[in-house]
Length: 151
Picture (cartoon, rainbow, N blue to C red):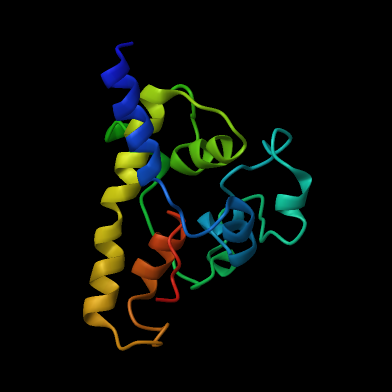
């Protein structure tokens, strides 16, 4: 890798500033509580102490009590699932948070995360400040991408 490529990678990592940790996301309620099913052994136990979990998707486990996002099949059809993280973006984020780095995959996922800010902008533009009931689906979606839904 050339030093200019290395500099580009370092700058790219500086863009990634999630507002929520995986632990906080799990406590708030994401993916209907069923994202990992039972594949949680690689993550800190503390992440799951107060997590809202379910063996199957349960909309009541979501912070905003709505389904937000696409199915895994749709993620796969769109090419958003990579062999390194077969469960998708959140699995990548959890592993990234725990120190794993795969520059090629990290760049893809950080770009996807960065692009999701358009939903934050839409909420700010269309909702009164403090109205957490406005655009609940979009708020649930940004929560699932580590953005603070209480904007």
